[in-house]
Image (cartoon, rainbow, N blue to C red; front, side, top):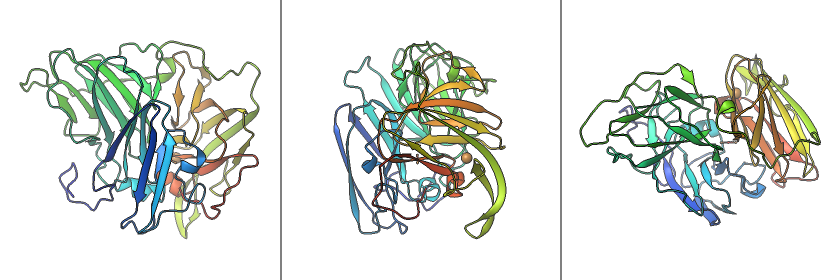
Length: 402
Ligand code: C2O
Ligand code: CU
């Protein structure tokens, strides 16, 4: 199959599509997806990234199910009661399988649409598909022309392993949601680039002006997506602004469902370092959590109902996008300073070299959940651990795959 840079590559796909079938449902729908493995030799699963499904639907091999081997099928079923922008991907040997194209969009529309919008859904391509920051539309193609005055929403995910620098030029815009979570009272942004973590999503909204607008990854020499307003080809600036979007200061404060006035039930600290070591019979540069690699990384034990605070400290020289399954994390502080904007809920938090974050979550979804770096190469090499509820066990024991 040919990929955006023009070359021919062997891709691994859902229903033969890059990106996989766009799954779009309305809040309240029961979602039923049957996965059949035709020829992915090592087996496959589907994980609903960012969507807090019951544990049995989480798609993690040897925790919530066995891998689906060639010739086998497996059906996922859950109620989609939370609106937002999510994605799905194989969770077996994720680095290889997502990297070769086994992923797609999962959008839950709100019951009541607030205003009419033109929606565009896309991803930054994963590493084996195209590592140069190409944008892949999630539902066929993107419009070339958009009528001035149209409300536009771009739901953008990052399927790559590294954080991506994205630029929208030609208009002011807002970030309406991060990882599917609405921002309270977003304000206009301009001359600001976005940094989308590996695995993260942002909803970008704007009103189409009467000139061209473009969205592109800073690495992408093709200029990304250009939207024309008049049918004529005009140019949008390809300049890269210096300011980065700061979610910790964006939008307006408001009370959340997470009330820490009585303190936390559990406190965890995770320190990220690196070391050279043997893993799988080879010397690798490895990324450790509290000095350890999986399966010796800490197991976070909680009781249902616990309010948990986790501190991430990155002492290594690589970005680590930390992804917790089954729960949303509320960012409390970044580098020691409390967040001042809209509540910032996330499922995939990029922790840069030298950074420290404190996040909180409510243990309200019993199970055994992965908590791992979404640079999937790091996860493959042991940068993962689990959140486990007391008295919850898995019948699918064995070695855990990322
Ligand atoms: Cu998107 Cu555990 O992964
Ligand atoms: Cu990492």
